[in-house]
Amino acid sequence: MTQERQRDAVRTRTDLLDVATDEFAERGYSGARVDEIAARTRTTKRMIYYYFGGKEQLYLAVLERAYAEIRAAEQTADVDHLDPPAAVRRLAEVTFDHHEAHPAFIKLVGVENAQHAKHMNHVARLVDLNSSAVDLLRGVLDRGVRDGVFRDDVDALDVHMMISSFCFFRVANRHTWGALFDRDLLAPDRREHYRTMLGDLVTGYLRK
Image (cartoon, rainbow, N blue to C red; front, side, top):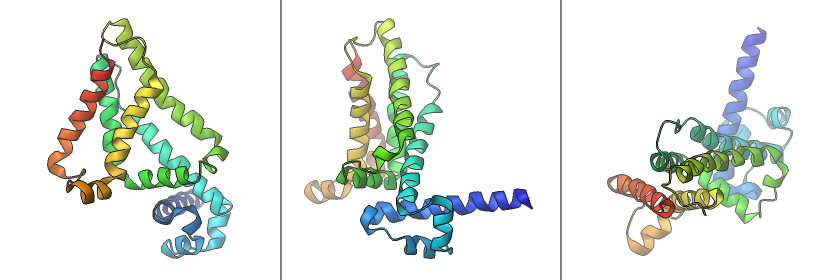
């Protein structure tokens, strides 16, 4: 019975995070309603407060999970056996694929930027989570410098920004870009073109 209750608790918490992710992504922090999250998960506000403590804590848990997911994807990319240019390209592709598959993540980042990261600053673990991405990238860049294929004046955080900005823009600006230029940045027939383009941009910037 104890194991079953534990499984139920995990399922309930996961369901709440899933629905809360959609709610916060679509409505922002101020517009999201705990009542709506409770209704969509067929639970109660009391249950949400039991698991998370309140609306802000639930939002912070959503943010933490969203960042943990992309950082986990990077860590499982297995780039140690690849030469540095291929490793950087692979990490860029992981970010590209994850951003495309998780549009709610893009919206959540936008929500938090609109609020000047005032909530994110309360989650100390996010700093550690995201530093892992830069550390992984720095290790690949250092290998490239030692092999004589990468410049030695490149900052890993700048490369992380380059990769993230391309991937973020493609998803976040899909609709405005389409309205202005009549081009769908997420069109399936252009997906590989943009994926390859990203890798070319990053490796081209890094090469000596």
